Image 1 (cartoon, rainbow, N blue to C red):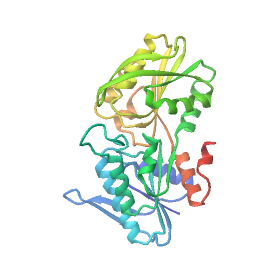
Image 2: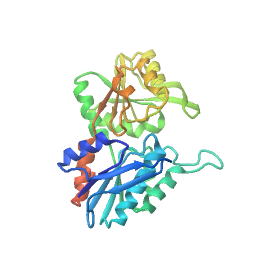
Image 3: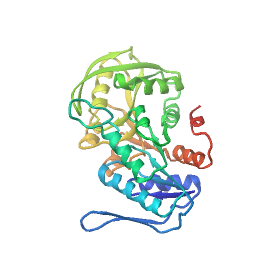
Image 4: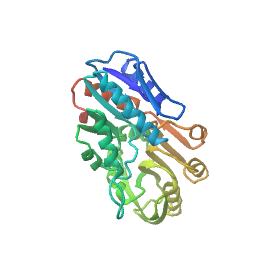
Length: 310
């Protein structure tokens, strides 16, 4: 079993390697003067079971190309099996045609990864579960729910909680966490006029006197979460926090969260935190390294991965 890390999230790769008690394979991933990606694997991987750890986060295209070229290098070095470990799968929000003459980019990226020579994909909290079907190779979609649930139980032990889905599409995800901690569920009914902008329309459920926890898979502009927090407080919630798997937090999102009425935004380290995220007073990160590391170990040993979530 060999671990190869790209440049997208070195800290997470090192944490996974520490959990597995394995060193990262020596490799070089650098740029030529014109920003072409160059990869060199500096250890023998012939006949090995190789795991490539690379989130396709910002800059998404650069990190995607790194992944494809690393996989090609391993394929040509006669690796026995290559598993792409994608803690965050970029382009996942483009999983269907929202209008005429629009691409389905998630399918295109799945094709690129498969064609490059990946034998198996291991990813976390896909934006849409059906993206698993875009791959013609075995794909394991892990869930951050156990990690988030454990943190909620430690932080809110005994408090009257209400788990809140920020939109109708996230109800299944929110219900799974509500069930784990035996809490009630509320839903934010919102209307999105255009990408990146949303307006809270209504709160479905009685949140008065409750500590509310918004649960989502991706926070990008953070507009939805901040608007939802404001609406929940107006409906009588005592405090509002948010637990989100992937902290994309682009543009002015960090400043928006810092200035909002959110008590706390908790994200995982599936995407490497920027300096702004690290110093924000109400943003906290929990690690998914043990979860991904255990899934990788079970994959290498041909054991069940799904039993991690039983």
